[in-house]
Image 1 (tube, rainbow, N blue to C red):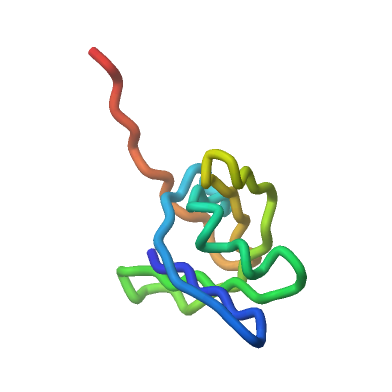
Image 2 (spheres, helix red, strand yellow):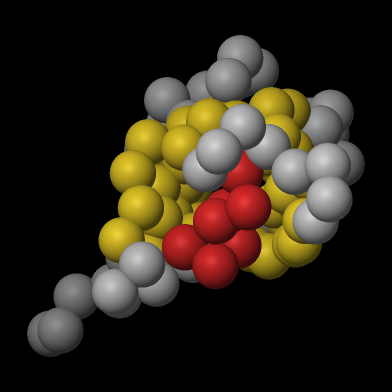
Length: 86
């Protein structure tokens, strides 16, 4: 997936990982930082089966450069499969 941010005077792009089927996505804070004060976030999916969807910021942590966004509308997403240490 690709995440695009537009804040009028600046913007950026990055990637993310689907955490939950209801649209929660983990990304980097620097990717969405320009949207904190009213910019727009658009999520595009690699499989092209979904149209571009908007997203909103759920939370950010500049210190660890992590952020969580939530895709608005659209179908349920397939969460990433995370490995175990064993």
